[in-house]
Length: 338
Image 1: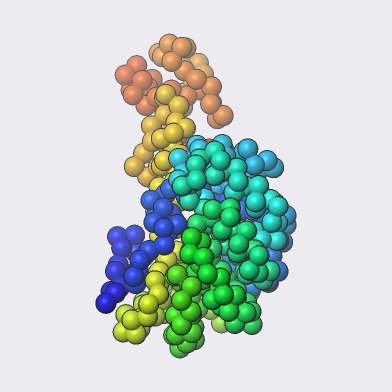
Image 2 (image 1 turned 135 degrees about the vertical axis):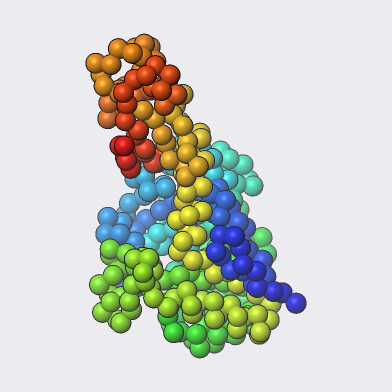
């Protein structure tokens, strides 16, 4: 009998965690935003207005216009896989194919790829194509009116290399509908997992969520009651014991583990000789006055906000300095000058 397991990250799992999620929680996945084009208009969609409805490409929040730049960012992040998201990547199929073929060629056939889609234009031919591309996981967020068609489609798909599951947000006080959904999905043998996510507020969806009566939690980013409903749902899952893997991913897990660990890894791989990577994954260094003569000029480098050197050297030479803290992202976002 499968049991509910609570992970140190805050995630809760019944059965087995999907491989893509295992890599995410270790900071080993890069996120490729294939396109903002999407056939659905979900009122709760958290995608920002710079992406939503626009045919743009990002990797780890970096805008790119060429697949080679995706490869570079993935390498700099030390990733062992990518998550293809949108929008709906299947609505830019040629681009999707090119990205998958490229990363599998560069990083090897075991480089893990999972794909998000609404399933709106999913067919047996598309499933066979995804299988031939060696995509590892397909995660579907369907329109409820399209659920029956998609489930029947999956049931008629007999290959098992491509793992297929569903990914949906948890709406507060929606336990009965969730139970009915899991009872329905668990009857289909070719569905491998269902991921449920804490409902998040964002700048682009907050007005719509509030208009429908949802309230923001004290953390200022999640919907009040979403987490409680998720825990109740996992408890019911354990009682019902379906033959289906179920995974609840809270919003804090994304920020504290998926993103932070990827930053830490990227920091280690991209830090210059005078920079230190903190335990939080940020870049630390010293900024000194350009007129400072205590440190040999050969030990000072030009940074984007001034003359920089290492904290150790600044201390050793008795130079006056200020501590600079940056994110290890592509644009080195400035966090603090202390």
